[in-house]
View 1 (cartoon, rainbow, N blue to C red):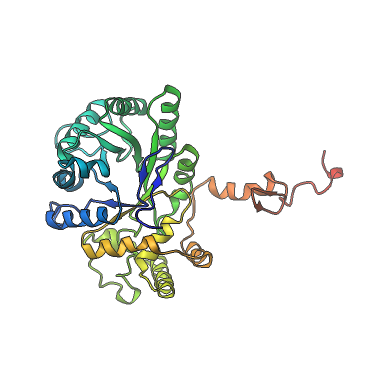
View 2: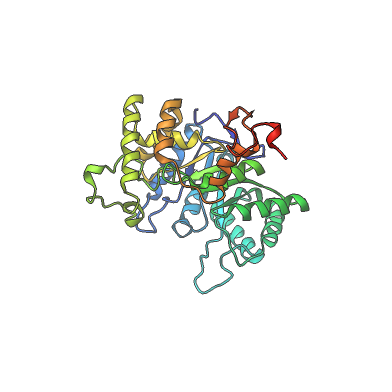
Length: 361
């Protein structure tokens, strides 16, 4: 896999690079992140190597992330048109204004206009709902988004951080009413966060949504810089969000990533990214980079190929406990298939199944 080996996103013809540049760290307005100069250098390096998929949001660094992209790409037509720029709505940027955020028609239209202004472009390639807004009917949200597509202000639609049942409801309504469909799903997905395999990933595969994982390194936990030997001495920039994840399971994974990285002559971070990229349904993995060194290390993951045994080792250590009914469904094949092989998979028949015709009433 190379950065310029493009893939179509979901059930659409939109071509995106297999790694997507996440820009939440563009701007130092939150007290950490990349300077404007460093952000521009990171953008140029990513684009220069063939990457074309850029992800931001209206709320990232108080809108500064969008503005950095707009100043560097949006105002230059040739650069802008070659990039696939994705941004998000929902975050309220106006304290005291109940309509400043969310997914109502009023909020969506206003947020879109504000993002277009900061990005200095006439259109957004992929417009994400950043998170489900339970106070707004989903048909109102989907109709407003369809109008933005029809007006030419947005090209494609996606959902991020929303329940599978709500995504499925939205996609079904859009299909029935002839509105613009969702083509992508953005979710947290890593070796330390695999519960999405219970509902969200299967839903996306069934309904034609390309999966774009965020935090594939689990907020840096799987980057290789945290070790069991240094436990208790870590002072990461994101504080408890990182340290709370550094338990025995995480360290077991970190140790295994280190062993596989040594076998392949690469880094633990690249191995963790390669694992995510190999998962069923994943189209383009979102990587973050505050520095050029981090970008280069993450981009090199595109050249890492894990063999079956290495994947199995990581799968075993990271196997999630999925919510009901997934545990039941894993067993149900035994009383559905009758001990036969279906689609290449065989499971022993349920022991209580009649063994002969004479036992069956």
